Structures are given as structure tokens and as C-alpha cells.
Length: 273
Image 1 (cartoon, rainbow, N blue to C red):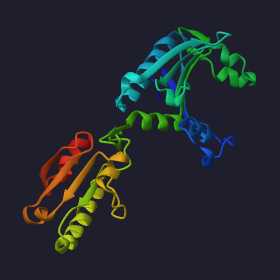
Image 2 (image 1 turned 60 degrees about the vertical axis):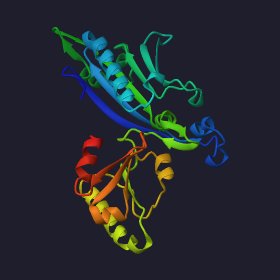
Image 3 (image 1 turned 90 degrees about the horizontal axis):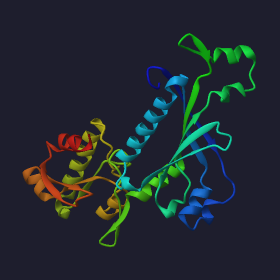
Image 4 (image 1 turned 90 degrees about the vertical axis):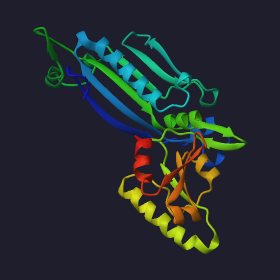
């Protein structure tokens, strides 16, 4: 739903491309060209007198949403324009990176009411689309948003990627990371069996608390976890078995704090809010 005086409908459309095979991709621009196009569409019907307010509200909402997940929000650009026949105005949201080209990943449009008059519909259906405002019947105004999902994914990955000490790091927002935490075992060979049991128990506790945890079948190194965007790592060692203390490492700061295993779930919940 939109605001109190509007109605919103969402849909998803997909278009397959055959111009370039994935195996022939050599650059990011080629990858974007080869990927299928999936569009997330939002259509809002609003009263003509409130069209500008609704359009401005949508622009602010979408910009605020994009910026909340970015590491470099200053690279977000917006450009406005009107169609040649003046039937709509649009606002394009783009990422200021030459790697992604100039194609916008979201386009917002405000259509004039005349768009409904040109629809190939019978009169009864057209009449049902009319809205009353101040005792007068008129066509509603249409406000649309279209997001190109594949381009948006490339946009988030490009924004999050950087190198640290010659190693790749993907500083994804915690809500976008595929896993929130991984558990690394660093103990002596004689105590590995006990540490693995503790690792399985902690993994189960995270799952029960709905914290996405790296599967036990994927023993990634610290560098591999950083390169895949995992925000936090837990280190188990011999001292964990003796004192109950584990290490909690942040991907972004690389700092590691000491936390008791009984407190680790609640500590992570606070970080992931």
C-alpha cells in the first residue's frame, strides 16, 4: 500500500537474454549484458491533486533505502528528466562508478492522467478506474518504480568490494551478507574432537536463534570469509574449553574481543540489529 490516499501494487517480470554466454564474459560490463533481466515493479495510483507529494515521498523513501545499505552513499546519483511528449517525468537512481556504466538500476516515473485515456479498454472498465476528488471524477495519476535486480546486485557488490593488505574484502551490509557468522576452530590436535563438538553445538544455537551461520561443511579461512562478506567470525581454541572464552572478530575492524560462549548469541543479536 502507498499513503492513505493511494493504492500500490507490486509485481516481478523477467526477460532472458541470449546475446552473450556467461562463459564468454571477460569484464563486469559483459556480465551485466549476459545476465537475464529481472524487474521489480511498483505501481501506485493516487489522486491528481496529490501526485507531486506522492512522487516526492517515493523518491525520498527509495533514496533513503538505498543509502542505508551502502558503504559509499556519496556515489549514489539521481537525474531527472521529462519525456519528449511530456506524458511523464522520471527520476533515475544511478551508481557513480564507470565499472557499471550509466544505466540506472531504478527508475521512478510520474505519469500524467492522460495515460489511462489511451488504454485499449472498454468504457465500463475505464470508468471503474476513475477517482472522485472534490466532487469531480477524473483519472488517477500513476507513479511507478522499476528496479533492475541483477544490476542492483552488481551495484551492491561493487560498492562493498575493497582490498586490505592485498586481500579481497567484501564489506556487505550485515542484512545483505549470505551468512552473519562463521565458527573457526584453532586448537591442538588432541582437543580437536571436543572443539568440533562445541562448534556443532554453537552452530545449532545460532540456527535456533535465526542467526545465519556458515555451514559446518564449508571450513573457510578468515580471508575467505572476508572475501565473501561475512560480518563476524568466532574463534574456538583450547582456552575456550578451559575458560569458556571465545574470540569474536569483526570483518570491518579486524578487531577481536573476548566473549564467554554463554553470552555469544545475545552479543551477536545486538550487533545484527
